[in-house]
Every structure is written in C-alpha cells, then in structure tokens.
Image (cartoon, rainbow, N blue to C red; front, side, top):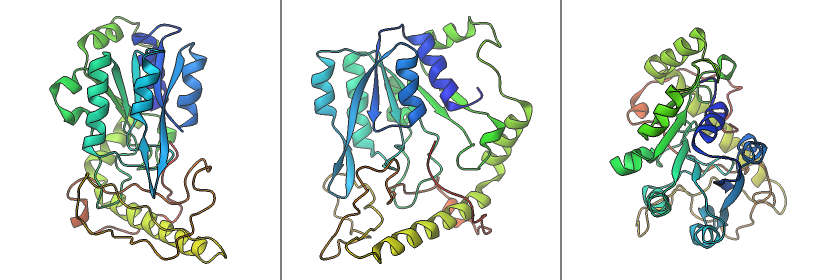
Length: 287
C-alpha cells in the first residue's frame, strides 16, 4: 500500500457498503474523519473525553448509541491521534470484547507505535489473543517515526481470511502499489534504524520539555507532561506530581493537538542503544 489512509479506504471498500456504520474515535485524524462520509459510510462516534490529566474513551455511551445505530467496523487509532494517549491493555480489551459482541471488524491504525515515551508501552491490538487477531486489520508504516512519508509505503496485517480473499480477487494494481524505493527504505528503517530513532526520541523529549517550560512561564498558565497511563489500582509513583496550585493549559481541550503529549515508550531494548543526535527539526505526532 502507499499509505495508511489508502489502507483504511481500501478495507472499508472491501468490507462495507454505503450506509454502513463505522465507529471512529472523536476527535480523530482529519483524513480519517473525512474518508468515512466521503465513501458514503455513516460515522458512529466513540468519544475520547478529558479525564483529569488524561483522556478516556466513553465506551458506555458508544454501547447505547450502537443499540440505535449499529456499525460494521471499529476504526481504532492506537496510540491515539490527536490526544497522544497510549491505550492500556485493559482499555483495548474492552474494545475487543465490544467487537466480539457486535461482530465488528477492527481496523487498527498503529502508525505512531514507535513514537512513544517511556514508561508507557504500545500494546498492539492483535496481541490480545488469536480471536482478536482473527477479526482485525493492523495498518502501520515507518513514515512517521523515520520521516520518510514522501516515499509512500505502508503495510497491513490482515486477520480475517475472507477479507484477504476479497483483496486477492481485485485487479492487482487497482489500489496502487508501493514503490521499490519506499519498500527498501522501510526495510532499512525497521532493521537498522534503532539508533537514529532513539536519538530522535531524545530530541522530541527535549522539545516537549522546552515547550512545557515555556508555557509554564506565562502568567496564569501552567503546563506539564501528562501522566503516563497506568493500570487500574497501580501504586507506581507519579513521575509528574501535581503542582499546587494547578492551572490547566487553556487550549488543552480545544487544540487540534494537545500542547502536552502523553505518548510514552520505544520498542523494548531501545533504551540500551547509544543514540546519535537526531535532527533538530524532528517532530512528533500528526499522522
């Protein structure tokens, strides 16, 4: 595939018909939001709401909405864009249970999985078990983390055999194909790019900390990195204890991208790498 957006449109075209309901988190990446109605599908919103110093999915409200307006597909953005929220395993399991009860195909966009700060960790939706894997499509790409979006290459892992068979039955070039240069760049990024990515993550941390410090100096405004997601009942200490008094960033609930980011960890083993300095223009998030 050429990119994750194409992958979403491809699988919606193969798995649904005009008028079908598509669950998507709100707020969401703008091209995803526009693709659903443009393709004649009906958006069903899974609201992502402010929750103290983090964000949560309002699954209870979604359940009520689905009793009135059913859906065929759940579009999951994991980690979430634009809030930067890294979903915990228990939160993903709630969605997996919902998908099983409602017989939903899950399309999971995991393109930001490499741009995550420790101590949080990205949990692939397919890792929840074989039954979950059998009803999901994972879309991802090296283009975000390694800044190679111009080479237009993405990959999909397709769980349902019926969906794979439908795609195989289509003309091979109908949806476009990835170029050789993009494929080789992706291979190089994922097999040899760990030191570069570790350096990029260090630069992103510095950028984030500088932004938070600058905003905190403004009169009447205080910002800090959001608390990393923890499992319910966790007794782990908060690495960012709440200052007193706390004055929240005024734009945090209305900005297209929240000014304080939640993402949190690289793939296992990256912390042990001695990284080179990354380019100072490297930025995070914004699919």
